[in-house]
Image (tube, rainbow, N blue to C red; front, side, top):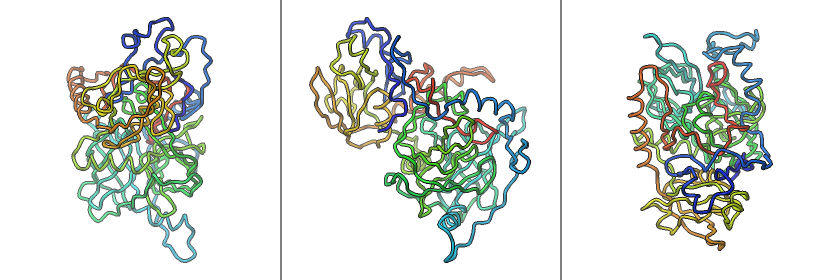
Length: 471
């Protein structure tokens, strides 16, 4: 498992506590109900080696761009290089394939009828106002569409354009913690669903195409390659709110990295392979400017489509659950508390009836690997578990009192914590005054404490609706 900010490993606060103080001083990292980690404070004096990831330099160049051009539906008109107030529709007919057609032409002709232009509107003063635009992918003939949660977040009305026809759409459901949402085009029939590929079977260097509506320019395609796989990232609640998301902790496990162009407006659109099969949902970019710089990321199709199918079935999307509360371990913490391992995920608690309890995990165990992949922090383990499915059996490498052993754990699901989080969020919203603001509980049980590894200090995910109103 690749974790972008593996060098930023938080420790228990303070260096002079007793080992017994771990349970008392650690903020819980509950893999079942939050993405909390022990602390978000680096050890004083420790050398900080920070990798630049999704949003390097956003606070400078990109923020200046936002202030200059606005974020409420403004886009760049390529012909004039000026901001315009709303995206002008672009009519583009899929090329008819022939014996001389290029690969890009053939794939575009197959996939463009399944690509969606999404317009999101919010109610203000009794009227609907444009909130932004994004992209989506047709899943069924009768109009179920998958997109990103941050494309629809905050919207009260939606329009979708598919193969030149515009429909009113309703929001079927969302999974904010995974940035996945499902829309339904009203009264749609005879649509062309996109063929689903296998995102677990990708090779670095293979051909790829992005499709969507960058800057509101519908039916746009770009080609490139799969640059990397298994790129994982956590965006905590404060980062999500800051960069245009739902304000809930978002977990992106095992994303696909590509150099095929992804720009504001591509969010929710398709990443496809050379057979024209969906392999990912375009979601994030890393850029100094906020626009294409050759490094974009897509949620793997296997993961996203599974969640979307749960939403379509009327279920609350669930995620794999280990059943433990965790704190991150580093060398300073190990020295202070006399721990046997210098990195890993310290088990601060085990939930009754969980897979972890059944496997024999105990408080004080340090998990150092999952399925042979090193675990260096609590966030590493959370990302690894989120990349699995409920019911999967995983192999944990556990250091117990200096002795390593392997344990087989069957993962549960987070349905109970999801329900509790939703109820807490609903109760909190009811208590807020009109136009009030508050910290919500995420569908993964995330909360308002804002804890988690300090990814936000220098490596941030950029939701694509941060600029120009495109998502």
